[in-house]
Length: 97
Figure 1 (cartoon, rainbow, N blue to C red):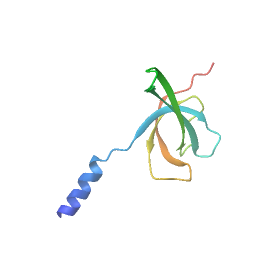
Figure 2 (tube, rainbow, N blue to C red):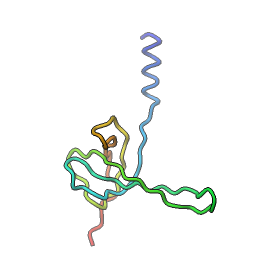
Figure 3 (cartoon, rainbow, N blue to C red):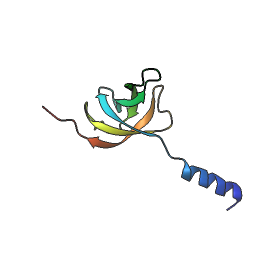
């Protein structure tokens, strides 16, 4: 193995993909779910903790996730214009009331 191959192999091993945890808000598209990710940040002036939310379209091959499920998503290559994440696991099933 040459040094170029060794460096390339090492860089791909160390590269971890970003993962986020959120709640499925829509499952109406085919093989796609919309995941709402919430993060808490300190307001720069008020010093108060505020919630920031963002929605991501994530790939779901078997359409197995339903609205209200808590899932973990992982960054991937772009799969469409708006979809560059995929659902990797179900953390909590939605409660039926």
